[in-house]
Image (cartoon, rainbow, N blue to C red):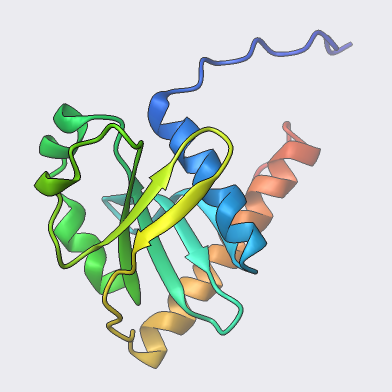
Length: 152
């Protein structure tokens, strides 16, 4: 018989707390969000958001300057979204962030878009693939929650 003891909770990182605030904010705007999404092998974004008109936005959550400076992969994410944003807390020195990207202030509970990232429309085929992959990833995660012993 399987144990029914609850699994111990893992500590939540500062970046995960920012992501939660971002996801709550975007949900109120009619977006569906998914954390820790891989648009392509070797790339993992903190939050991807699918908008009410099919727009795809990527948000990278940075908990501090060292976290930002150690992230050399972010430029490779631009080809996978219509808009790109950094999410940081209000104490983050935003002058070090590239000006041609979006800016979001976030905390554990909410977020606010401070600067809209420039829009660069995805090609239709890429948008279709990302949307399909988002749906499959979300469905697999839900299936694993319902049936942790299943193969998803």
